[in-house]
Image 1 (cartoon, rainbow, N blue to C red):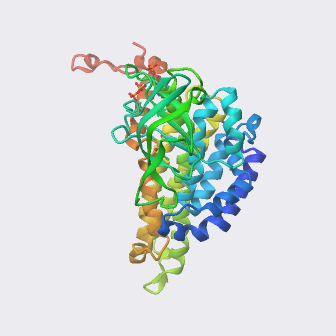
Image 2 (spheres, rainbow, N blue to C red):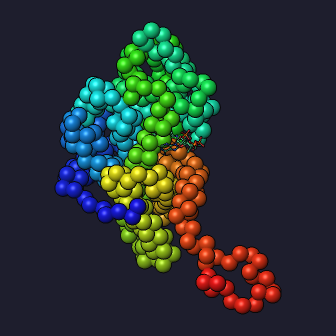
Image 3 (spheres, rainbow, N blue to C red):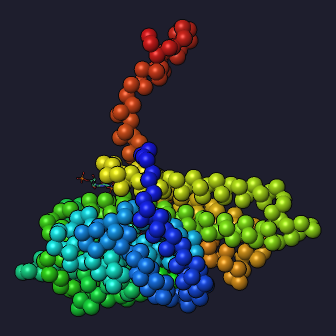
Length: 410
Ligand code: CAA
């Protein structure tokens, strides 16, 4: 970053399709699926028929190879109508990135075309009960036994679990090393089960579950990448590519809440006038709009850097994720305020926006982890700024005796 942000024709076409599907199949059913905590298969089918799952899959494997920027644009549109459906869509990219970034040619050919067609959904199994932010502290093991790996243990918070057909599972193959391997597991493999479907505060239209692996035997060929020791790096690289996607979900969530708040503030009358005519409400709306727009461009810039093949995209992805998701929470909170007492009631759609926003600051790396990642990168990059040292006086140069002015040229 910074980068030229170019919206390809394909990206704009997919964005327009996503907007249409969002208004036709997502928004009208959002409250229903939220209440029922059920997956919106109707919208997922429409997304598949429109070819939107092809957006993140390379052309050689049946996709459009439209890139992370296009993925962000599509995700934003879907999330604007229902943030939960936004993640139901984007998590397929998260689960596919380990295969796209690290899979062998044979594995890409085996799995990606059916993902691109929307015939198969994907999940990403990294977190565990005792390993959330500390993604290196996994305990699920994969032990080689002949031509198969035997997987044992439990994963926590698997988004799309039960709905997904393919699971990218991060396992420990060498307990003495931090490196983890990834195995792809297909639904129906004996010993693999979904044990607990979580009862959540928000994003209720997409299941989040515990996945259990009770001596699950997977062919050695399912080891993503085929060679040991790359799992942790693949997880980190995957998150670098996926975080602009969750950030785009946040932009959609923020824009969706802002749009509802603006419409309501024009309609709601107090003291004989629409509340949108009051300066304090106007300030809230203006701040919400500025922060949402700033988030959007941060997301676009980080996605464009990934598409351009930048070497270090980690900081940009973390900044977009952190800023956009904090913004979504702030905007959703202020949107409820604009709705006043009605905003607190589930009769109104803004309460759901508020509930849905919270998880954005937690999953795909808490915003505390993002800030740590950003700071670590800033500190590393400071090496390139060493010429500035000359302009910063050392403490002893600012003592009383040193009454001559420090210029940096001395
Ligand atoms: N790309 C490539 N390699 C990377 C990398 C990156 N972005 N970040 C780290 N690595 C490499 C390092 O170079 C290092 O390699 P060596 O061992 O060869 O030196 C190795 O990985 C270990 O790196 P660190 O020492 O930095 O690891 P750490 O343990 O100190 O911290 C962390 C890493 C950033 C905290 C990481 O654990 C992390 O991102 N945690 C958050 C986990 C997370 O985001 N979970 C989300 C789950 S998915 C989800 O929520 C989705 C959903 O439900 C929808």
